[in-house]
Length: 439
Image (cartoon, rainbow, N blue to C red; front, side):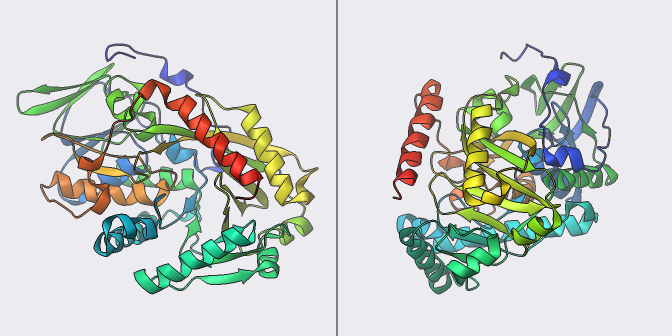
C-alpha cells in the first residue's frame, strides 16, 4: 500500500477471542483532526506504544499516540496472555555465541520485563488484568526432551543464578495438567498469566488519565521531515514532533509510512482456541494450579485455564486471515492431550501475528536522528514490549541504555522477502515432521 492510499479502517475484523468477549468496556478515543504539537509522536497503541507514552510522560515530555484502528486491535489484544522472562534464543545459546557478560545482561533484561508488567498493573490499578505469577510448567513429551529441559534448568541455576527450577516426574505433571501423556517436566517460577486485553485497556486508560492524547482510527499514512521536526500525517490531521517512535511490530504494513519496517520481520500467525466453560468436576481436574503450560515440541503448543475454560494455542497457521485448518489442528492437538475435551465445544477461535526476527531477539533503538523503533518480540512480547517502553523513553531523552543483543544496529532485513511465507511453511513442515517421529 502506498503512503497516499487510504482504506476503510472500520472494516478491519476484530478477533473472535475470549479476551474481546470478557474485556472491560473500551474507552472511546477521538480521531485525530487538525494539527497537534508534541515532543514525541508514537505510532501504535499496543503495549510498546502505550508503555513508551507512559515513560516518556513521566520524563516530563509530551507524547501523542496515533493508532490506526483502536488500542489493542493488533497483537496486544490477540495474544495468549502468557508472561515469561525469556527470548526465543535461549540464554545458553546466547552464552555460547556471545559470552557470559552478554548472556547475563540479556537475563537481567528478561526478568526486568516480567517485573515491568507487575509495575504497570500496580501503578494503574488494573485489577481486571488478573495478573498471576504462579509459574510455568514445561511438559516433556519424551525422555530426550525431558533430559534437555532439566539440563537447561540446571545450567540456568548454576550459570545465571536463576531461581532453582523444580523438576517434576510423570505423576506430578499429570497432577499439574490433568493429562497422562507427558513423561515429566520442569516448573519455572516467576512466569505467569494475564488477561491481555484488559491489561492493554487499563494501560490506555491510565496513560490517557495522565494527560497523554491518544487518537484511534488515525493511521499514519506518511512520515516526513519538515525542517527540524518530523511530521506524522493521518487522513484527517497531522502531528508535528521532535521525535517519532514506531511501535507497530507485525502490523507495520498497514500503511506505507511504516511498511519498510515489515521487511525486518517474518510474520508468523499464532492461533488460539478456547472451550466452552467446563463442568466444575472436569475443570477441577485440568490445570488446577492456575499456571501456564508449554510443550517441549518444536512446534510448541501452550495451554492454560481461564474462567473454567481451556485456552489452547500454537504456531503453524499461515496466511493473512484466520485459518479453519489451523483451528482444526489445534483442536486435534488439544484433545490428544486432554481426551476429556473430545465432546466439549469451542466457544472462541482467533489468531494474531507474531513478529519473528532473523536472530530470534527483539530490536530497539534509533534508526535515524529523529526516529526510534522497537519490534520483533518472537512470541514473548507481552512482558518484553511492556519493558521496551522504558528503554524507548531513555533513548528519547538522549541516553544510551545497555540493551545487549537488542540493539537496533543488529537488526537485519529479511533476504528474499517475497519468499518469506513459503520458507516459513517449509520450516514449519520440517519441525512438524520431527515432532511426529519424536525427535
